[in-house]
Length: 127
Image 1 (cartoon, rainbow, N blue to C red):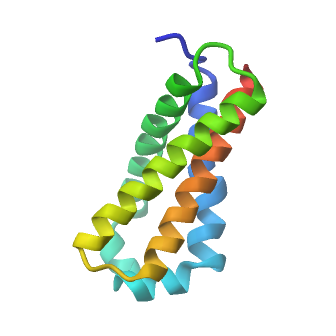
Image 2: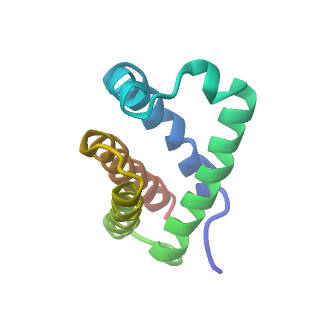
Image 3: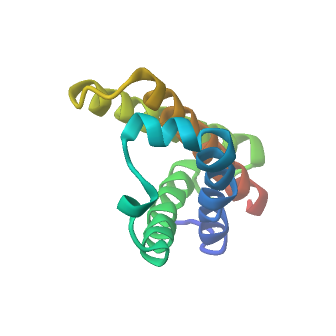
């Protein structure tokens, strides 16, 4: 596995750079309404943010592997977009069986597209 091990944790930070505004001021109220999850149910912030970073590392590593060794910015960005499409499709499958509303799929699915595309861009910047 030939990936830039510095690029992966930097790309994982996009979880917070994009997720903060996405699930905060942009779509936070709609997400909470669609899920029924309250801030109290989410749990201790240290655990939530820590686990989000761990999963971000896994996602960024997946994008880096798909992008390949020394990817260009455009190639890595497209690789990230592809991973994001796959993640959004997985949400779509799961949400159908869980009877989740379409609005929630749009919030989470488009977030996945934006997140993994951004991860790809970061990985591409590191080459």
